[in-house]
Length: 418
Ligand code: AMP
Ligand code: MG
Image (tube, rainbow, N blue to C red; front, side, top):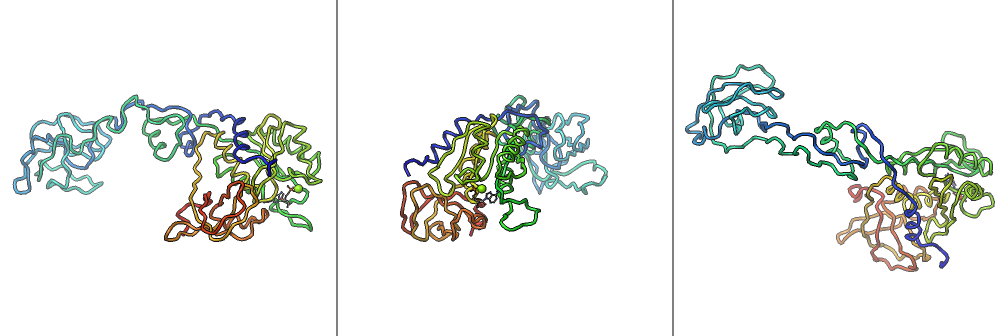
């Protein structure tokens, strides 16, 4: 095992040569889920003017200091202030203005009394005439039910910092301050090439000796799931000319990353190695990892390149371990992967490589337990689908008794588990 490259060391070497992508300007709603590349400051107060937080009456709090249910205080209603309008006059002592939630507080008023605390009634949406006066059943303090200008955000204040992930609340704030275009980090464009004489595409007939190309689609889905843009290149036959042409097609797409699957082991027909050697500078690693020992990494035509193993599970695991962190660095996103601890339900044997074991998880009284999904064949894609997580057996471990606690990389949301 000594000549195998350690997983963390390999990842370190990979990330050392990956530079974050630049930014692009997009419509602000398209920024959802993206990382913002600029600071955003408010160009005005939010709310822009003092306004009512209730439907009721704008008043002077000192007028109704002594109001209660037994001795209500009567005020003259002198104006109506629907939302979206500008009050026409000042409120004087003894006066009230009917006001709707969000409507501007008139000058002279310092509080709002909610309609429920008066004898007034109105039907929402109707044009009920204003009553001449109202009776008020309780007191309020100066400032009650008033939202001050700039109470949420002050003019000039930085509301979103460069590097933040844009979520629905950030979208709302961008809208509130009128920022309809924003700079976000570009999404990585990832070219995906499958290689192998045995492959047919999803819609083609299977003929003897052939299998459907699943990797191209699994990898495209993983790319999408990680916020990047997949560009699927038609599969390449195990012929020098064909592989060369597909890599050239990939380069013509000006991708930020190229991923191929299969052809990086030492099979007699694995011509990928020859072509990528020709087109760039690529290292062929044997990683201390199971599944997924063979891995190629380097640059092809100046573009970072991963040659992943062909076995579907190995392709997925090496994507998770090496390509996903690369996409995160390119797009400057933080890792959202969730790890939990679980106790293995059976004795485990390992070969000393760092192993990612597909497991089902169960919540027991004293914590999570993990049971292997059965076959750990690196060709068994269904075991990946059934797995709740990948249990990580560290390097240099050959035996673990049942009950040992290990880290699990979750493949589902916790709430889907039982
Ligand atoms: P290779 O790396 O070419 O030796 O391939 C290893 C295994 O992965 C073989 O069983 C291939 O048939 C399988 N394989 C390679 N490419 C794909 C693919 N795109 N989809 C599904 N299985 C594949
Ligand atoms: Mg092959």
